[in-house]
Length: 190
Image (tube, rainbow, N blue to C red; front, side):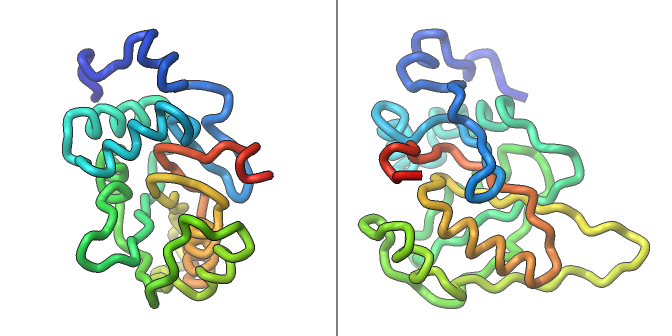
């Protein structure tokens, strides 16, 4: 549960544009985010990436879990970083903040180019075949568990779609992706 001191005041919610109308959507797959990855909220997320275990980081992750609770029974699957030594810890920390089962079903098959300056089509090409997923257990009596991907930022959706494709191929239905921030539609031409 989120402690009272972790709730943002009205001024902070306004300054970081939290809880706006752009915190969920369906393209490129269902997604939920705490805010739009721009301006002050972008600065906050970048600060959290530098110090993921900070009080601010924990509070923001707890707020995300409170604002966008996921259905009980889903399995959270953090998207793994391609960087071996200094990988991004945020997907794992976000998953842990939801207090639901999570597992590393996804594995990177190879490192890709840094995607910071790539457009959507270049990102899609860069991530083709970049993930492998552990196969789903074969049980006829139990329905398949829906998984939700977990990442820090959803930009063009190329990473999420590549991860979804690998999970679906392995027999894991994907319900969507949960993340801290979503890049603005105007900037990406979505």
